[in-house]
Image (cartoon, rainbow, N blue to C red; front, side):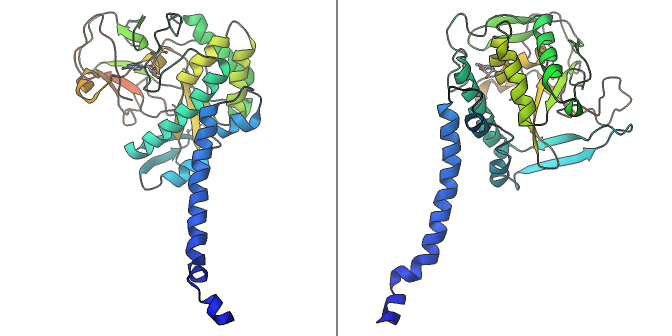
Amino acid sequence: MLSGLTSTPLVRKLPSIFFLTAGVFHVYQHFAFLLQAASGGNDLLSIETYAATDPYVTNSLLRNMENKNLTSKNTRHTSIGEPKRHRVSVKDKFRSKRLALDEAWGDSISRMLGCPDVSDDGIISDDPNAYNYIPTIETWNALYRAYHATVDPDNKFLTATEYQNSWKVPIEVKYRRPEGRGVYAKEFIPKGTLVWSSTSRNTAIFESSHDRREFIKYLIEDPKTRHLACDAQMWFDVIRSSDKTFYICQTFDEAVLLNTVSGEKSHDQINIEPQSMSLSTDNPDYDENDCYGNDHYFTLRDIQAGEQFRIKY
Ligand SMILES: C[S@@+](CC[C@H](N)C(=O)[O-])C[C@H]1O[C@@H](n2cnc3c(N)ncnc32)[C@H](O)[C@@H]1O
């Protein structure tokens, strides 16, 4: 009788049931994270809410998602023994998942702050007051101040304390629907011109959740910079280093206002692209410490005065 019981189909299926349940739980965890991110929360100080939507906390989730789809390059040391900086190369499949998490995190904070609406497909709302102010040098300086006031001195990767002009050509920032603020050429620029460089003078790295959270809180606490927390949530990028850790990179200048194009067919409108300058260390714009490694934008073709710069993202 007993042996009859142990050989029932149910008992034989127990291992598969166990693995199926574990699998479902694993999938549930991913969805729980995304649901939590989507539902936001109303208290920025609620660590649980914040942590659930924080790219650093999602490191392990992301690690499960990728591996084969990602190539990361050499970790580098500077000659004067500064902390390690990283170069990252991410393939498309992983990139889309990473961007989805970036977005979920950004959206969640935006909801907590009551930021102007950005619709699901990334189109800025019709609200005339949404994201339509033109940042000034004081705007960028406020971000520098917030970074230096909050980020642990040991973790600081930003060497400058105020706005740097990293543009190699004259530019103008304008607001236009539907994409919002964008960067426009003020004069004709020939093909192959370096227009902007990412360096440790203009690009901050946030190495920990704590630093990023304190930075955002600092912006929120001053009514004059509260709106900047919304912007900061739209202007950051997550990179993955060769040691499989994720960091937030954030440039504190007009490069964060570069728009992309919508739709496959319009991809020929992309007129600047990042190129690695790793082989040109004698170039005065080369900076081994930059966050993106190869965010040195060159023109892909001649650009007319008044044309908007567009990058692929
Ligand atoms: C890095 S920001 C670019 C600056 C942004 N336009 C602003 O006013 O701050 C990226 C955001 O710009 C908007 N954007 C960029 N390219 C766009 C496009 N082609 N069409 C519509 N919106 C776009 C999206 O809302 C996107 O999330």
